[in-house]
Every structure is written in structure tokens, then in C-alpha cells.
Image (cartoon, rainbow, N blue to C red):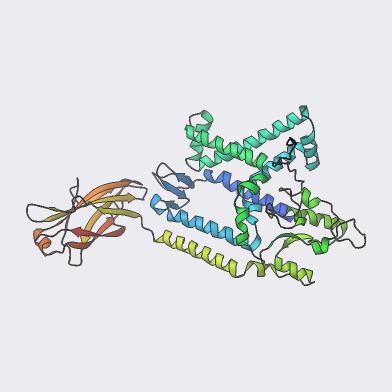
Length: 479
């Protein structure tokens, strides 16, 4: 009887580190500029000041969790206005669909945070350890003084970038200058330190070590993108009808590809684009730069690797010129995405300009629905929540109307008049009593619709500036 082999092949393959070579070209330059702009926006934005007047924060972009508000320059979003945030998320999704259907995974290749920070970490790695060949040698050599020194320097810079990344994130949730000094002197809230170090740890691990693994295994977008693309989508491809068979230059029968592996050596995902489209490809364009550089050196025309669509492939194989870029960008699918994106954006802008500075919620008290007083009049009770969105205290006045005229008498609990003062940027709960006199109650129906008017009287010296209404129902009738 044979015994099972103890040397069965493993189903798990250990990750082979990727050491992309430095490359120059238009796509690499574009990625440098985008990285600088995006990182600049991320790190600098919390420090921009914006004067909103007294009693309001002067940070241009602030997610004020304590007071449940979001500030974006001149725009202020309250919790009940979350539809603005939802609308922005819808626009972001539609924008992602639009760019993917037009030019493939341009988000992944140029603007995704994982790509941006990985590019930055690779740049630091190249500064410290050298270009591709030097990094490979360092990776393979035994641990010695040189390797320990270079690794510690590299990791220290990575960790500093990661700390800055986590620190920048928490600055969006409170006043950045004040929190910065609190972090330095150790008086910041423990949640701030915890959040900063968690984000620093994930940035350090994802950008420094996981890298392409995040794109291949953790991110769902590579598996979703296929639904967004069609035969007219521009994506990076290898013109194998021109490059094959590969071989030495100036050998009869060989194509333009000399199998120099330049496209593979610069790829941050470690793939060979000549094998066709692959899930790991983020369409960053670095292989195009590397191949174009090699074509220039051997005197061949550029474009062996480039952006093309499946329809272009068919045309080029037949010797026809490819379609224009604009015919790929502007087609039915992209026009639909653009139209939907624009409609959502227009709707948000209109809603932003039409919203009022008064927000009120009126809820009838149901237990009991109404009370019959000694003189035969009927009283209903309502709970009101008044929100003052201004940066100063405001007075609010109340009145009620019906189709039959002003038949109700209003009183406010704890107030001598029909005016209440709501502090700046706060919400006040106020009980309102609505009474129908005996003669009006006797003639009224069981349910009477009426309109409650709320007028913002502005500050103590400013006359009324805004007025809103809330439709509700008065219950009760004297038989």
C-alpha cells in the first residue's frame, strides 16, 4: 500500500515583489503632475481659511461631527440635507462610469489613492535604494549593514508620509491648526491619535508592501469595469499584428517588437501587456512610454503599445486608419452618462439655491388628539423643532391661516408672545397650542386643514427676511 506523498505542490504562491524601472514620457509626466496636484489638495485643504462670521468655524472644508454639519467654503450642509451628499456620491459614480466607458481604468491608473500613494512610496524607494536593478540586488542579498541602513531609511520616510496622511485626514474633522498643536503637546483626544495611527498603518502597509495586491485582490472595481466597457472603449493594448514575431532588429520576417522587456520592467503591476488585456492592468500608460522610447532608439514608429479600441484593432489589421479619439469618447453610452451626470448636478445646484435658511418640523401631539376646554373651545398641541441656520441669534414669529380665514388662536408654551428666539446654529424644540373658539369649533369639521406660517424676523435690528409654511391638520369638533 503506497503512502501519500508529503511533497505535494502548494496551492499558495508567495508574492514576488515588483520593482518597476524608472521611465520618462508623457504618461509618466502626467502621473507626476496629477500626483502632485492630488496630494497637494489632500494635505493643504484643511488649512485653507474661510470667514463665515462670528460663531461659525473659519475652516474652508470641515466635517463638524460635534454640531452635525458639513462646511465646504460658502456651502453649509445640515444633517437633514444629506441628499446633497447622496447626490455628490451619485455624480461620483456616474463620473466613474463615464470615464471608464470612454478610456478604461483611467481612475485606477492616475487618481486612485492606492495608485497615488504607491507611486509616492516607489519614488522614495528609488531615491533610497536605486533604480530597478539596484533594488533587485538589494532584495536578494543577505541582511548586512547596507541593507539594514537603506531599509530603515526607506521605512522611516514611508512612516513619516503615512503619519502625515493620517494626520491630514483627521484635520478635516476639527480645526486643523488647533488640533496640530494639540497633537504635538499630547493634549489631543485619544480618538484623534487612534484614527491617525490606524490610517498611518494602513497607508504604510498598502502603499509600501501590498501595492498591486490591493488592486488585484482587494478592490472590486477591476471585476465591475467590464460592464462599463464596450468595443469602442479606449484602453491600452499591444499591436501584435505589427510587433510579431518578436526577435532581433533587422532580421527578415521579424516584427517591430525586439522583446526588450521594457514594457514589463516599468509596469507597477508586473504584467506583460503583450499577452492581452488582463484584470491587473490599471492602464497607467507607463508601458507606452517605455515602448515609445525603445522605438525611438531603434528607429521604428511609435505606437506599438498604445491606447486603442477593439474597433480600431479590426480596422488597423485591415490596413485602415483608426477612428478619431472623439468618435470613441462621444458615443451613445458616454452621452447618456454625461446627461445623467449633468442632470444630477443641475438638480443639486437648483436645490442649493432654492433652500431656505429656516427649517421647521411640526408634529401634532396624538395623545390626546385634542382637548375640550371649559368654554367649549378646542385645543390641539403641536411639537415644533426650529432650526436656525444663521450665524447669529434669530427671532421667529408664528401665525395660522385656513381657507375660511384666521379662526385659530395661537399660544406658545412658556412665551408671552408669538415670537421665540433660536440661538445661532442651533435647534430649539417649542410646544405650540392651537385653539379654536367655541363658535368656530362648533361650525368646523372633524378635521380642519390649516397652514402654519413661520417668519424669520432676522436679528434684533433687521426686519423680517424670510417666511416658510407648514401644512397640518386641526382635530376635533364640538357636537
